Length: 179
Image (cartoon, rainbow, N blue to C red):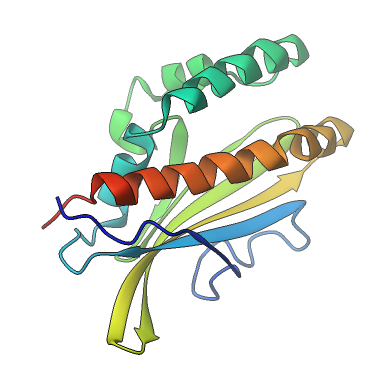
């Protein structure tokens, strides 16, 4: 595995992403990008699996705290989400259901009573001063159904951003899987 630039940039939702126009007025929409080394694999599903398999330890603790709090409100916990995927683990990436796959993007997410969200893992080629470079763009869009959903997003948005940036930075520092 080769190390890449681990700087994570906040970017606009990519116009070519399937999630960009998914919800008319999303309650949360953000995207972060990190440069991929030239020899990194180009399969978005494998990149997503690598990204979520190597989360920092503090992310698991944060999810455990989240689960303890949301279970009281009848929201899905990570344990419940993993149990939903136990019958067909290829149809999930970590706790996220796979909605669509293409050559350059995988769309993950979940629907719940309070909100629906989609997460895009998109491989994008950009023109740079050195020619062209590949980037991995992680985009999130959320549509809330009710006040609980809007409160939940308000409360977790800062943590969401920290987790996404950390995941991309950590994967880049570890070195993306190579072809």
